[in-house]
Length: 94
Ligand SMILES: [Zn+2]
Image 1 (cartoon, rainbow, N blue to C red):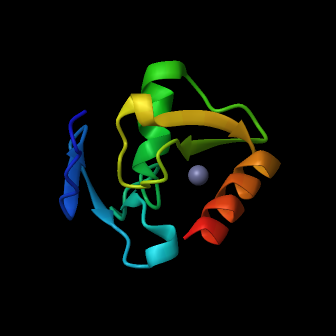
Image 2: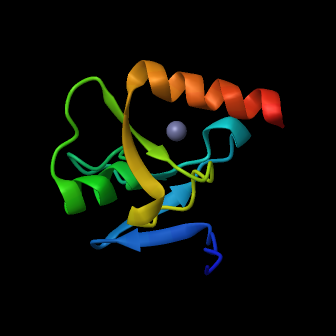
Image 3: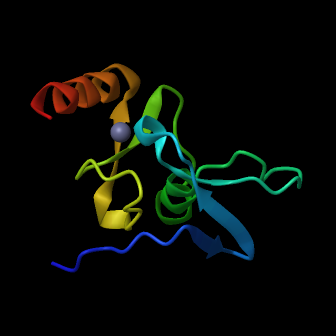
């Protein structure tokens, strides 16, 4: 298995995504002041590119717990409640 590297910035479709600093919410997000891009999360765009729109009530979750590992095989859709539960489980394991 290749270990993904996490550069501070990733360019996706010509738009710059940067890592957020907060340790509990470390996603790549876009801060370009362009309509439709501001605040976008990269993992959600990657999911949509491969599988189409995210249905209401579902969240894109990082299977290995690494929120910067946006390989499509590391992403899955889970219901919102289950998503919260998964993260609570990790918190107690750490
Ligand atoms: Zn998650």
